[in-house]
Amino acid sequence: MKQNVIAIDGPAGSGKSTVAEKVAEILGFVYIDTGAMYRAVTARVLDGGFALTDLNHIAELAKRVRVRFSREQGSVHVWAEGVDVTEEIRNPEVTAAVAQVSQVPAVREAMIRLQREMAAEGAVVLDGRDIGTVVLPDACAKIFLTASVAERAQRRWLEMKEKGYELDLTALQQEMEKRDRQDSERELSPLILAEDAVLLDTTGVMISAVVDRVVNIYRERCNNA
Ligand code: C5P
Image (cartoon, rainbow, N blue to C red; front, side):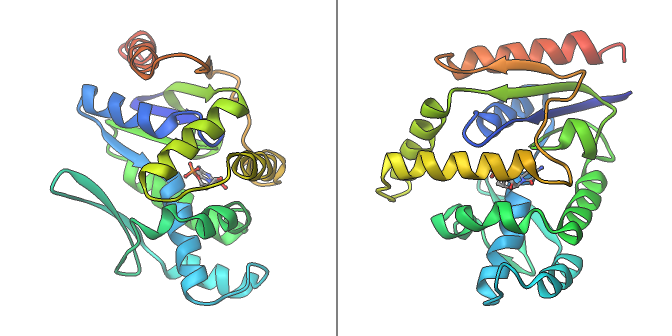
C-alpha cells in the first residue's frame, strides 16, 4: 500500500481537478493533473498538423515529448516540448480530440511512466481516469467522483464562459457524453470504478464538503497504511 498517495478518478466535469487541487493544498501535497498531460500531447499533435488517425506520428511524438508542470506566480503552467501549452490545452479543439489521442497505446505508456515517476516521492494527489486502477493501484486512498451529466455540463459551460468561450450548452453536454463513452469503453485503462475506491456523487454538493470528505478518507485510510 502506498502511503501519501491519493488517486481521484471520474468523468469530465465531476469536480476532480478542483477537489484534487484543494486537497493537495490542505495536506501540503503536490497536485498532478494527468488530464492536462494527455491534453498537452494532443495540443502538440494538433500543432504538428497530424491527423488523429496518424498513429505512427502520434506514437513518435508521445515517446519524445516530456510533459512538465511549473509554478509561476502561484499558477500552474503546463509545458510540452518546451512550449507553454497552458492556455491551448483547454481550447475546444483539444477537448474534442483528446479522448482519441489518449487511446493510443504509446501515448498511454509514455504518460503512465511519467506519472509514476512524478508520484514516486509520495505526498501527491493525482486525478484522471485510471489512477486508482492502472497508474497507482496501490494508492492508499482512492476516490471516484461523479455527478449527473447535466450538472457536469453546466459546470464546464461556466468554466469555459469565464475563459471567454460562449459555448452551446446542449452541444457541450453531447460532446461530454461522447468523451465519457470513449474513455469508458476503450480497451486500455478504461474509466472504471476501482474495487476499493470510495464513490462520491457530487451532484448538488458544495465543493468544500467534497474536499472535507476526501481529506477524511485520506486520514482514515492512509495514516496507518
Ligand atoms: O481530466 P480531463 O477532462 O482534462 O482529461 C482529458 C482527457 O484526457 C480525458 O477525456 C481522457 O480521454 C484523457 N485522460 C486519460 N487518462 C487520464 C486522464 C485523462 O485518458 N488519467
